[in-house]
Length: 418
Image (cartoon, rainbow, N blue to C red; front, side, top):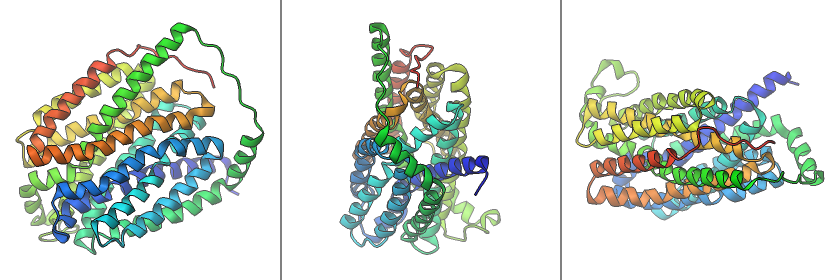
């Protein structure tokens, strides 16, 4: 038997790795489409995006039933289903030989990926104190998964083929699923028995003013969730393609550089593009740690407004830039895109009642990931018609809308007791 503190740390580590894998699996195809399949299958980038859209809709729509099942059955049990299910789905997707087959595989990946956010975040916000920093730390792992999708897939394209980018993480996830089951087996069994025998507590009466305030905050949370998700998807999904277009000169110089020879040989442009995307994602993910510490200290309103301003400035500056300047400004707007992620989760964690928290997170992620899915045809439409420069200006406008919305948040959140 492991000591209690060691088991607790391992528990949080597995939850963090789960967040890493969740975002990695959902974005492997973004790099595969941008750097490999458009050549191998002879389809345009915009056409390939269409086959990822059902997977992102599943990522959102299945969040609600996942949260409901977690609250009715077992949150840890649902995490085991997540690890094993998404791993097997990824392995099967690697065998796709047509766009329709890969679209079906991505849909199944999306179904299992939908489990993590309503369930994993409910565990994190209920089990540990220092909510802002815990959510931020967990979020950093998710962002590293976003970046690693580009890094791992780019490397696999140059050194074995894109199918390995689905197979290797899939095997790793299945192994982790059994490790999670071994660690939490007793808790799953106890949780299941408790849910069957514990009566529901009656909610305390709420004053009309308090109820109105909660409705106003909820409207802002779900509005900014939708807009933030469009920004997040438009940047993370499209960044490998943006870099493929705008950093070609830099990538070619780096492949010829001795300092990169240990990692990429001459002509390994996909590896370099994936590496640069990973570096941007990894550095930008640190914004969540800063935001997490600020949330606990200054509250979500002020922090959210600062993050929105950062996005406005850097999105507006991006059109027309290439190579070093494009890389620098991309890092700036990714700091804003990643920094905004824990804010709404922090507000829900503070205001949502414990017994229904996974379901409330489920609703939040239905909104979020439905917006993610809807943004894929949006990206394709703008890219085909006007290119990425127009997309950056549209995203700057979206950040302005966020700034206006969050200016209406109260300075202090109402907190519902557990």
